Image (tube, rainbow, N blue to C red; front, side, top):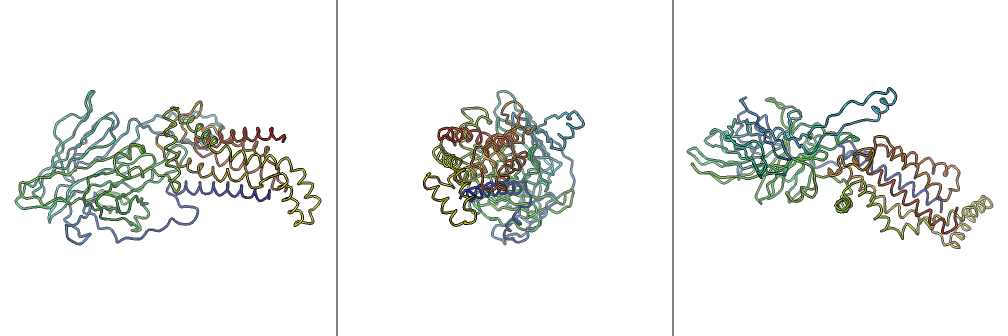
Length: 574
């Protein structure tokens, strides 16, 4: 039974780490270990975009879905770049179409990206580490053709869209002290008898931009305009921090029918876009590690969703993708006007703030398969952090709370292991006497366990209970922007990336080896050797895990050792 207990423990440890690695691969957009990702139902090929910039092929009310309307003009036109600055955003707007082409987040700076190889080279050749200058994180940018676009389609002719030159109305371009908001107003010339006026509203402390579309029918015939909101970017992945390979990057769609749905770029290439195209609520987003952009319209109303790859023409890269929504407005008589309001989010995935902006927007923060555990775990960490103020000590406090909650269970398990260590000499003598009589040896062993009131697999239960928490914490650390660049103390300046000097993994490895010494020895010498080898092997794997995760496991080991030591002393076990 001792061998069974140890076997179960190793199976739990091994499978947990394999699942962690598999989850990491999935989160980083790589192929999972256990075969290809589940295939989604292939939908009909997406309608061809109307222009090189990705104007959606909208539909006429009452007409068949996917019926293409007139192609927007895409002739090159002069443009002006206008920069708006607030306390949390620096946004660049292109007057050609009114696109938002750049968004800097000055409160979130880039991180250095050291590798183990670089550090080893520095140690061997005594090279000075290159100077790193942090810069603001950038979402929309020209390098990835990443931008937010809006415009009009509808009728039998072209209407103002994201390729239409617009004129900026004079006004403030920076949020001054004492101001709560600053606005940018852009006006188009008449296109197809329709004039489009866009007003961007930037508010203090907000990562959202209010966008008002005023549509004026300056023609002589009624029109039924459709407003489209879309996010466009290439298929490259964004690096997810100093210790991570590129994390998942791609579009996401949420509505009341299909709920939250992410799509990989490679699936879009294959036409695997299984989303509900019509709904009365919802939003679209471009997700990357720690940050996201999204078009939000919270007022109920019919909207059409689309996700597609754009053709490589008219200056658009061949691997550019678009996701967006189309809203059909009421018929506008000549001389009439109407407005449509939307909100553009471009900022960090702060869970508490996201949930206030739109239903389900917090889902862009990916917790993997353990969302049901990770969400309450983050809630508890967030509450503890409110009192402690340091994320490292918050993790230590979390372990302490879990140890208190599981104290009785752990005490029972450690008591069982201590008793097993005490009776180990008797069992070894018995095995030597009955080595040729396995059935009798098993019966005698069970008799000893009954007499000493030992549960041979009692030490497994705490491991079973703590492994899901450990894996959920891994996802919390991987996805929580609040812990990005969060220091603990001394050399740990960022809990979301690996320990730069591998001190925590080495301490964790040493504590794991000490736990092996505390536990009863295995009967099989080869198995006992494995008991000493496995902590080293696991410790090496922890070298690339976030420092916060290693801190959690190290703290757990130290508290477990203290509890096991006290129980051993109380029972007189050396």
